[in-house]
Each structure stands twice: as C-alpha cells, then as structure tokens.
Length: 347
Image 1 (cartoon, one colour):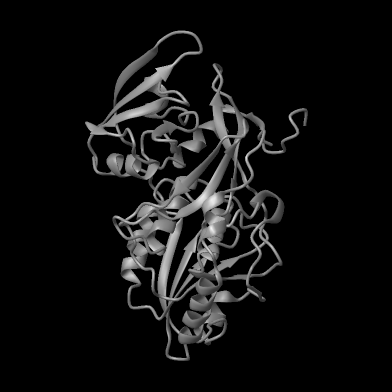
Image 2 (image 1 turned 135 degrees about the vertical axis):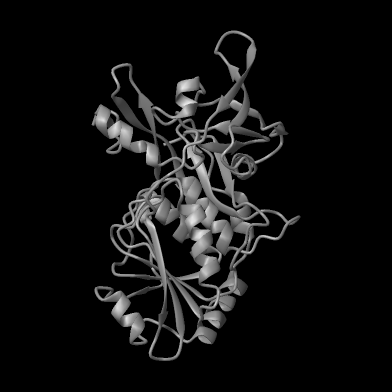
C-alpha cells in the first residue's frame, strides 16, 4: 500500500519456487531490447540456472553460444537460446557497477524443460460446413510459444481460427510476443512490427518487436475470445492482433481485466522474495492496458462457446470477416504506431 501498487507484494518461499514454470528460456532469464543492446530485463527466476550462476537484472548480453548479440534484439537472443536444443547455453554478459569499470562475465547454463502444457486444441466440424480450429490457452508459461506453433500447423486446414483466452491471467510476456510473431505477417528483411511499447518506472521507453521470418498463419480469419478475467500478457497479445487488424475480438464483457504492469521477482536470502512492478506496457496503437483493458469489437454470451461453434454459432462468414479485416487495415495509418506514448517521468 505504501508503494501505491497493488501488485507489489511479499512472496513466501513455496510460492516463489512455483515461478519456475514461467521460464521462456529454460535458464531463468528474460531478455529485452534496449537501444542497440539486449539486456536481462528482470531478476533471474529463483533456483534457475541463471539465478544460481549469478546473472543479474540489467546485465548486457554480449554473446549467446558465440553469436554476437550487439545490435540484435530480444527475439534474436531467444532464437539463439532455442537453437541450442538440449545443450548448454554459453552466455557472455557485461556488468556495470555504479562505481567502477564494466566487467565481462561468462556462464555455462543447463536448460530446463517445462512439463505440463497449458494449451489444448482441436478441429471442430461446424454444422455450416466450416472447420473451426479451436485453441484454448489457459496461461503463458515457458512452453506456450512452442505449443502454439504446433497447434497452428496441425490446424492448417481450418476455415477459421478461434483463440480462447477467457480466464487467462497472463504469465510470460515473451511467449505472448512469440505467438504474435506466428500470427502477424512478418517478412524477412522488412521492418519488424511493434507488438507493444514498454515504459520503465524511470520513464525510459522501449519498443517490443515481433521476430521476423517466424510467421505461421497470417491469412486464416482469426477470432480472439476474451472475458473480464483476461489479463496481462493475454491483453498484450490480443491488443497487438486487434491493432494490426489481424483478429476480430469477441468478449463476454465490455472490456478485459486491465493489467498493464510488469512485475519482477526479487529473491531474499531466506528463500522468500518480493514481487515488484518494474514496467508498464501499451498496445501498438498506445492503448493504455492498465487503465482501459482491451475493448472487444463485439460482445456476446460465451457460456456455451464450444457448443455454439459446433452448431455454427459465433462464426461469421469467412469472406465477410476477411473483408472486415481488410477494411480495418485500410483505415489504419501507421503514423501513430511509429511515435509511441509520451515520454515522461515514469508512472
């Protein structure tokens, strides 16, 4: 309460250990692009290889498996880690103390795999002869991006895709960014699309870009379903798809939850920790998720969603939906997306 932040709180030891499932890299590290560098954007997850080795929030990433990261993006860093497969990750960072020279440190980190999937999918044959690729994502954990890639490939024969994010509280922002890259058109060699803007407590403003060349399906008509409990990383993904006119958003309420703040877990010596807000994000069109949430294009009763899909309900004509999204894109101007929120003294 004294911090004025409802998300900053004390974390008991048992709860702190459960955070290990929210590990996008398998080594407990989260990357962010800052100017022309890749940095460690949050404290390493407790008991992860990055935490045990002594990697620190704010460290600048120089090399991953001998690949030079200077001038690269967080997506490049994620790809370099993924490319190691099950092998160890060789990480070189530079660490700057408040007083003193910059120090270069090297680490060899063993990757840990996530176990249970939070994603399920199926191909539903609707009564109107349409095939609906239904994807249910309960939260964003360390394997959500890979599981989504598999789902999209298995559902490639769908006439329409429906991504169900109802009740999804968020999780790993990096996984939401990865999924955006699968669904947005990103051509190798062209400028990357902005999936979100991030503002630190100090007021520094950074863009989060989707990785180029990782598109899986940017054509099949897409509906995203949200409700009052859809929050955080779910709102970032939905907001990016909505702002780029890639998805038509249907909600059971007039807005989603509205959580646009990013937290980091800071371990304490007794095994407990502190969860503190470290940044705030906006959609590509600078909608303030924290204050506005995501506003659906249409509201509907979603109590019996799967039954409605099978009976042909909630399924707009595919061609009409394509035309709707094309008109949306034509009415958009990119000028607003290129500027960003007003820079200031943080929040």
